[in-house]
Length: 324
Ligand code: PBG
Ligand code: ZN
Image (cartoon, rainbow, N blue to C red; front, side, top):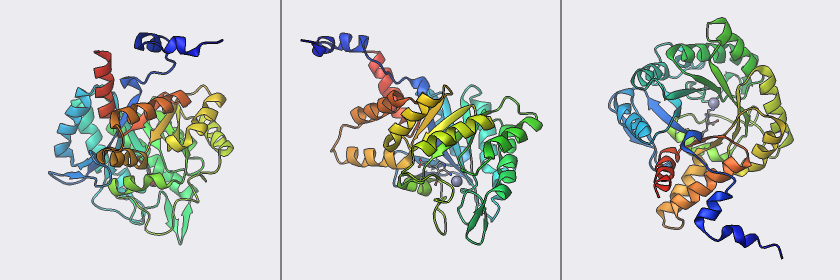
């Protein structure tokens, strides 16, 4: 008889043969910075997550550094929104100012800047709107300007999440020709039109005022197309590719990992977080156990970088585990 249970007999044996271990180095923590003063506003649908104004963000930054988190993903929420999302590429916009301040206080912390217009446009779409159409090519120029402005403020990584075609090569060219040859691009390559983003849209105040995002984000039924999206972005110059959401798309992460040796990030999105938090708050699940199981599954599927709202908690749990 083959006795599979031999290797499961003790924790030391189990850890000896364990295939996947999530470390603090794998985690990226998303943050929301809102224009204004003295703001620490809880995001109702995401217990534990807050919008901060720049002047109050110091306390969150301390928590991030205490937890030994090495990278954050920053979302800015401007006071003024307009048709063309002008604040997105204003060098003194809320996101640019926040990045400058964070980089000054924590120069080694990797700052990833989300590049998309939806938090900045009055209509809440990720591109320029004409009637009810979201224009592709007209949007590229604004994404290029936004990327250059964020890189100029000190962002280490530019992360386009808009899903316009051709944005990665356009952004690469814009960065290169403005002296940012070494700024990294992490492309939201396989980003699906997902119901799991709705708590985020409260957090970032970015819900579209009409229609939905299905003409630019991917149909959730398509796995092969996700591989093509990743291949295209690699060809266009992405350094890191992303699959989003994570948990309902582990098959996609796995497929992509078979097709490329580029680093793969997965975004464990707001709705995935909220479901775990809601069940945990009701006492229906053991939060720590479920979170570590989910994060391990994402890494096991093939993502070496995990963007998650659980990052700070998970980092503390990982640290506790290492001290046992
Ligand atoms: C902006 C953007 C979204 C998310 C990240 N960047 C929302 C969307 O596309 O509507 C979702 C993140 C999350 O749900 O945690 N385009
Ligand atoms: Zn967007």
